[in-house]
Amino acid sequence: MPTYDRTTATDFLNQAFQDEAAVMRVDPPEPGDNPLPYIPVDKAIGANVLRYREAAGLSQTALSRRLSTHGMHIAQRQISELENGNRTLKLTEAVALTHALRITIDQLLAGVQFAGNGQRSPHP
Image (cartoon, rainbow, N blue to C red; front, side, top):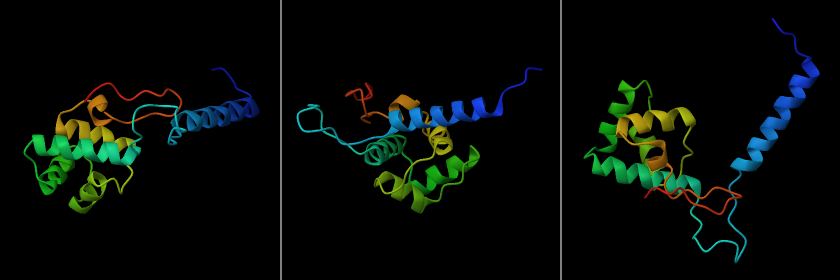
């Protein structure tokens, strides 16, 4: 079994977390930087959850129940907050939502503008 220098591993992880935070930071673009309108991440994801939930013919309560079958307990009130952009989605919840709504992660993230690349997710 290989051994690792604890200091090196710690430094590596710290740098990786800093790099990830820099990539994941979502700031509004500077004026003139991007012709696409800025949509906050939580608002874009919430709008997608609402759209796909309604397309599936599910109420918020029914989606909450369906999520429970996927091992994720999100109350109806939390779904409402999510759809209104007032709740940040956890990664585990995102995965469960894609299964419950039978959509891809790309569909869930459609319209989200990521910092640094000036691009939006390509899926409507």
